[in-house]
Each structure stands twice: as structure tokens, then as C-alpha cells.
Image (cartoon, rainbow, N blue to C red; front, side, top):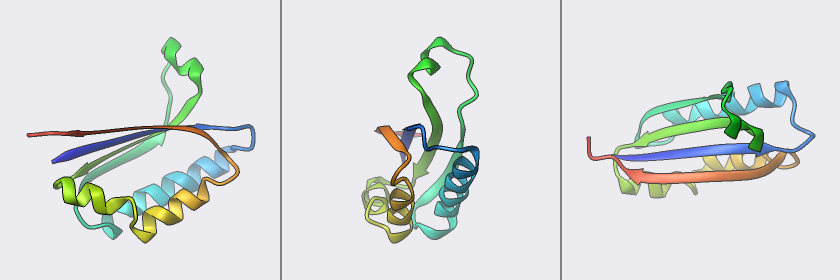
Length: 101
């Protein structure tokens, strides 16, 4: 299995409504994109000092294998989500790693 974690930082055009829209799009991935075992997404609620960096939305996807992870990026549903970030995204952090469990 492979873990895919993404942390999103938004600009001043980001709204609560946009955040809800993005989470809705992300939650569609599990049923639409082959190879996803588990998916969680949500707005960051931490009180930790590190949150001052402004990353507001987190995504964690567990994939069956590396091929499923590789096929995820170009998938049309994922690309629709990427396009929905236009005008509100400031930065993204992506971390992928194998999970042997």
C-alpha cells in the first residue's frame, strides 16, 4: 500500500463555502478512482504553533499499490479537483510513502 498526503494553503480568495466544495470533490475520489483503499479529508483545526504557516486543508489517501498512486494524478476526477483550485491556492505540500502494513 501507499499513503498520499496533501496539505493545502490558500490565498485571500478562499472562503468557507469553497472549502466545503473542495472537501466534497475530494470525497468523490474513493468511489470514482480505482485503487483507493481509504480516504479522509478535512479542514485543519490544530492549535499547534506550526499552523501559523496557513495550511488549511488536509487530504490522506491510501492506495492499494504504487500503480494505483501513479494512475491517480492524471485521472479525470483528480484533474477536475486540481482545476477547482484555480484562483484560491497559494501552496501545496505532497508526501507519498510506501506503507507495508
